[in-house]
Amino acid sequence: MKKLRQHAARILLSLMLTVAMVAPMAMPADVFAATGSNTQSTQAAKYTTAKTQNICGIKIYFARNVIKEKRIAASPTKLKVTGQRWSVKLAWTGAPSNAITGYYVLRRDINGDTWRVISVLGPKATTYTDKKASSKNTYYRYSVIAYKKVDGKIMVSTPTGWAGAITTRSKYKNVTSVTVSNLANVSVIMTGSCAQTYLSFPKKAYSKYIRWWSSNEKVAKVTNKGLITGVSRGTAYIYTKTHAGNIQSFKVKVTKGGTAQAMIDAFYAWNGYSRLNGKQKGIIDIYNSVTPWPKGYKMKYSDAWCDATITAAAIKTGNVQRIGRECSVPRHIKIFQSLGIWQEDGTITPKPGDIIVYSWNKFRQPNNASASHIGLVVKVQNGRITAIEGNRGIGIVATREIPVGWGCIRGYARPKYIK
Image 1 (cartoon, rainbow, N blue to C red):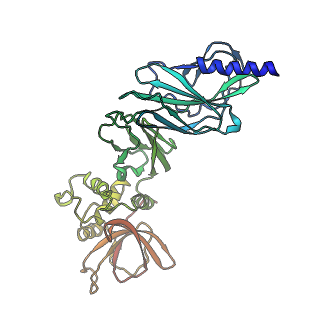
Image 2: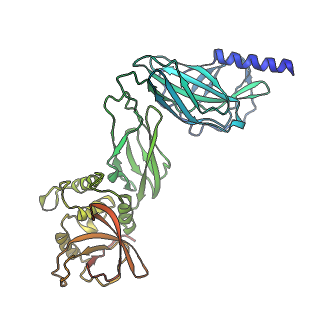
């Protein structure tokens, strides 16, 4: 037993001194992504001494006694790095400590082609500070890999996705977050349709590299430039990862065009968009995206936008031919009448997907009352109507609950949706 312990100690010391990771020059930027690479090989385990191993497309040189055909399934994830004044701090989500022996921390200078082990940590470690990463204006990349000793031999895990940073002594800034704009346009997509996102970066950003991926490519796909395509009905989350390893996400609803539910989904996706947070601009942008504009008028961000929200939802969901386009409620009623879908009766019980029109004139008369506001019916239950409206109150997309037959309801439009 004593000789075995001494032998194991020599193995670990040898690994600390000699392990290196060499990345091919033509290797894609995010080759460390661990998707689908954790599974163990079904082949019999083989051993090698002082040979280069290939782990997820990365060449790793081990000194001796490495299991060649297997990897441990437990691996670290979600690596983030933070540039500090004279150092770089790493943090990651660890693997179960009882499933591993420890971690190798690897670093690569941006101008180099070799990944080097800079530290060997215990199984409970989830952070590390690289105090030697202090050169000014130097970008350092990192990865973390778990290992396990089995009968004096070494098994390794899939590496984390790489993440990089520069120290705060640099004139450049690490990108720890990005602002994804055009969300009004991408939050709801029809099957077969595309929508483009746009990113805002901080000034003097060191790297504008962003990795994109979808939680469910059977629902929505995304390119490395942020172009999202609806594949089939459902919900997916689109993720962005900065060069420093920070991950953000937003939800995309893919729906079949032409339905009432598609309209409802579009409104709910915009719930909370307001003039205050500036997100209402995305709705107006969708309205203005289709030309010629009704009456030749391009909407301004300062305009009232309740009816523009109805039109924007119709554009997003393939319902323009069923609803029409307008930003004026009185003019939109005339479109509803021409389509044969207008009901001048505020006392009837509506259906989800109906367009509700209000008149704040207490002395209104049928067919000649003012048309003050517009929204979409999303639910009718127990004599109560739930509607969702753009530009409600202080200028926000929000719901309203009212009784059937409420005195300020002028009438409804019932579009001829696809069932």
